[in-house]
Length: 601
Image (tube, rainbow, N blue to C red; front, side):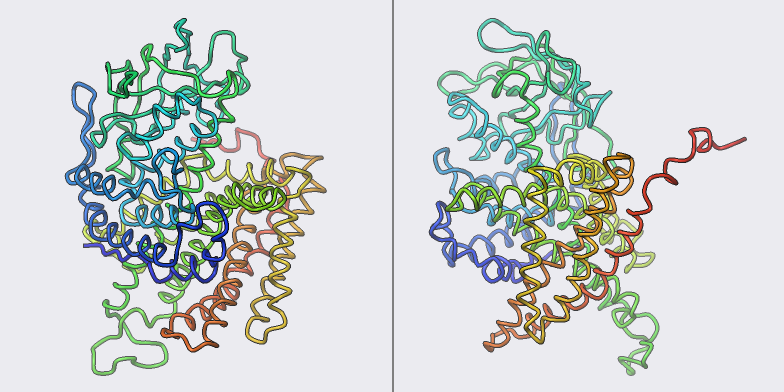
């Protein structure tokens, strides 16, 4: 049976020591995040996820969801009871606004809960997961009436939300959507069309589901400039807040997927369902992007989550499984064989996983802090810079984070050898569940193009320049320290590769846009490598300082320094190889005609 322990010690290190969350106590909402409250949230969330959600992960995968003849959907055994505990404990309210019933604490703590949930049971976490993005969209673009009607119930997890973009004939190219919104004459619209791949589109966890739906009004431009956003509840809401008639939206089927079986991914049919426009007409895509950006950060956390749980199980197996002898001589001469943990190739995979998961956790929680600073930093300049860097990091966290998360999950399966391919050990599920993270909320190719085609050039390149400045300052400060200098010098070389790749794009992408497209994925990985290097340098600095003060657990901080050295030795050199791939351009990639790809008889 797979195991899971919430990484509470490492999380406290990032939140309390690296980010120093207590130092932001002068900002709105941060005053609630006292040291005692931070520890309580981390420890209790870890306990809930390990004891309640993790035991349902394998059984939920095996049972899946059931669609009934009336279109209703039943979640796997135990999910409804677990969701009641989630709701009653208020885990969904952590970082939501107090004016609508939330606790108003920093998003950093909300991300902590999100990671633990995604790691212990990704399919379960997806039910409330998109609700957070829906709440953000309604707060930013909804009318006062819409906010009053939906937000308190959604924040309290009495109702959940969905995001409806994709249709059978179009995914990324949303300008092609066919779902129509016809005015009813009373301020509402009749929504007609079919949406697919709708996560948590129908279920039995809450009494109402609030769908946010992209559709086109009559005469709207036949492009992304003609998209509007609508709120369409499963049950209509009466003036007094009670539920009224069932709306004309139904689950046509549940997709049969490779993984996340316990989440109901639905085909939703809208047959003149009543909905209300959110924000301005033909401005729906901008409103939906508020939700999508939140979801993309959430998916990056899912990539971390599947890597973390796969890593934990692989470590336990490697310490228990005996095979062969250590290359330097028997590690345990009294036994017939040594644990496979002693073999360098097994250690390579485990160290790769440890370096990634701890680095990605630090990155995700730093991004959460940037979410808060974007809205609450004391000066406009600080808010603007936080927003620029967050926008730049979002596709990296989603794209690089899930590429590496899937890679780690498969490598941890490899540690098990043949047992990793047998369902009873649970490694197959981690790999299958991790795979979707590279696909949904915009495939990782789309993330790479978002980073390179949009984010690099925004505001005249202000975001990437601010990022380079941050990393450069951290390197310069560390160079004067004997322990940190080798780490800083290694990161400096990788940063130079990143800067050179950026310059190559500036010089070559305008003349031939295919050069940008051909190198975007490589560039995203270069930036991911450098960003995690930046996280590891910051963590190494904190660890060195802690060791100088005789901490209670010196082994924890010594492991941080050792893992930082491993990351700099084994991850950073890849930046140079990726840059050379990027600089190869697009000529050889685009040279062959379609006929060359067809298999001859």
